Length: 188
Image (cartoon, rainbow, N blue to C red; front, side, top):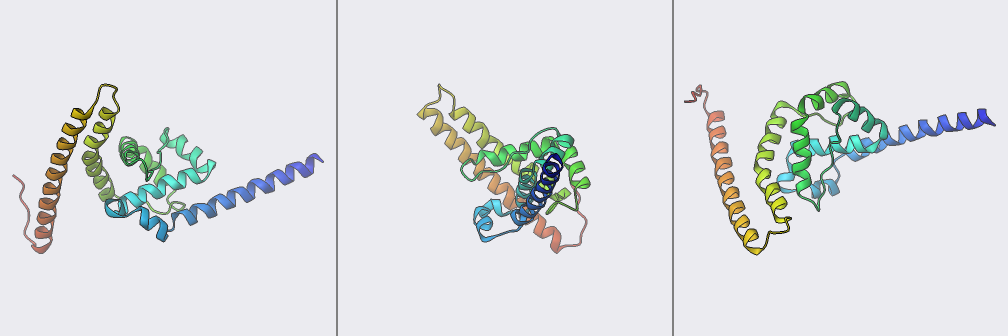
C-alpha cells in the first residue's frame, strides 16, 4: 500500500509540474483578452514583459520558491482595479534589479521574455511618472484629508501630468531628430 501511495504521489507531482508549465506558456501568450487589459500606456512591451514575469512567478510554487530564493521578495502583480499596483510592481523591480537580472539569466530559457537595458530605462521613467500619483493616493487615505486636499492634489497632479507630457514630447522630437541626422550629439 505504501509503495502504491508513494508512486501515486510522485506521478501526481509530475502531472502538477507539467500542468503548471503548460499554464505558464498559455498565460504568457498574448490573447485578445490580455491585449484589452494592456491598452494605452499599459500596452508598452516593457510593462507586458514585467506582467509576464509576474505571471510566470505566480503560476507555480516551484517558480515562486526559485524566485524568492534569489530575489528575496515577492514581485506582486498588476491589477486592473488597483492602478497603484503598477507602481508597486515597478518599485519592487527597480529596487531588486540586480537580483531580478540574476533570476532572468538563470531561468532565461523558461521565461516568456526578459527585460532589456532599454526596458529598465522605461521602468525608471514610468516609476518617476507614477510616484506623485502613488503619494497622492496615500495622502488621500489619511484620516484628516478632505475635499480641499483632494482638489489641490488633483490640480498638482494635472500640472505634473502636463509637465511630463511636454517633456515626453520634447524627448520624442529630440530622438526623432537624432535618428534623422548622423551628426554627433554634444550635451552641454
